[in-house]
Length: 306
View 1 (cartoon, rainbow, N blue to C red):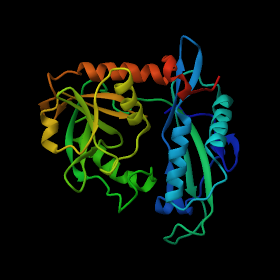
View 2 (view 1 turned 45 degrees about the vertical axis):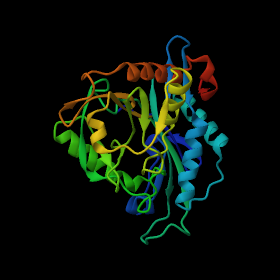
View 3 (view 1 turned 30 degrees about the horizontal axis):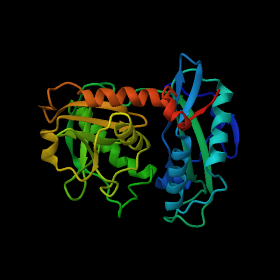
View 4 (view 1 turned 90 degrees about the horizontal axis):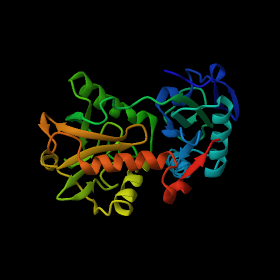
């Protein structure tokens, strides 16, 4: 894993090796931290690095912090500036992934969210594919259920909740699959282990609504916008039954880490013709252009690092 030389930690940029959290910290003991998964993309033609939709990412991060009763003086703009300062410190010239995190920093035990000091950090790493087989993923339905919003907030990226994602991912990979689909408490398709899901049926693009225990994904939002504006495709947000997946014409995951990942087989059944379909291929290309500031109509979503 290629990590950055520096991190933002306790209010300043310091060497990554010095950014350390105690084993007695509340976040370490109870998983009481929230994070964002964000990327910056290298545009080879322009020789520039762009962060994609940072305002939206940080707005979601602050919403997640609010759900865990975290207090901060940061707003979206100041978080963007801190990120730019950090990325410029190490002069990245490749695709990168970075992890902004708010966490409960006080030392000691005690199950609560109130009256605990909150801290903020960011570290950076070179980007690695989340799903290696990203044009022809073979997936299965997980025996694990997606965490319900009344158990742990589904629309917040709570660190402790990702035990659920880890169980889902490991079971799938160790059983010979690339990824998994997860059902909610009503038996509807919710997400992958840590990304949103789309399918094509009868020419329409269908994705679960935000009320089906999904993360309100930034890439999900981008896919919906591009499908409607660039491809003129009807997008429907509704619940998806398990058996609908078996007769879908196309399927794909969408997420910051996953990008647009084509799914070609579910439970050993081919999706459509068993290859990544035309809608998925077009959206995959459009998203890649959008994140690298190659779509003039969407360039206002990109913030240049340099």
